[in-house]
Image 1 (cartoon, rainbow, N blue to C red):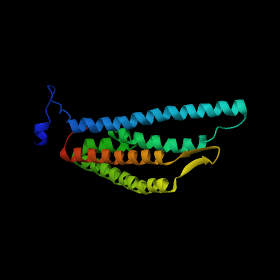
Image 2 (image 1 turned 30 degrees about the vertical axis):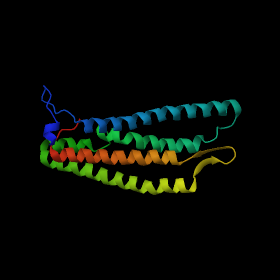
Image 3 (image 1 turned 90 degrees about the horizontal axis):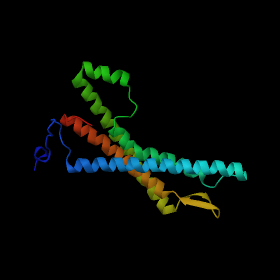
Image 4 (image 1 turned 90 degrees about the vertical axis):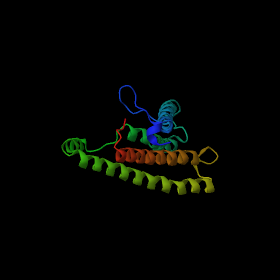
Length: 184
């Protein structure tokens, strides 16, 4: 079956998504939702630390280390949804007027932007594989032994997955642009 046989136009003339595209978009949104949940977890941890500092005069263990890992993790998890929504910071002051004036050159520039994003995030994801392997092999932990520790590998795996999905989202956008298909 060709792509045209899998894709149908709606009554309004819009192209319907394939099951693969719907699945991909659900995965991207699931990563973003997990990142949102982790933002809530981070807020609770910070608030608990504030209460502990005021009530007991001491900070809770793992808050600074765990918070640092959580921030990187939730950025990585929400990056693909940001790319998909077209919300990454770009020089909109330049690209919009340029694309309006030179549509073909603007499309080439947008494709180059997507290619660059896919390559850079792919490199970050590839480099993260070694970090995850090292964390697993060395049984890396954060915290103070005997008091409170937390393994780092779950965070690193989520960071790796987030960057890999974001790189693939850039590649999806690039392929859609090369096919001349409008993006959501």
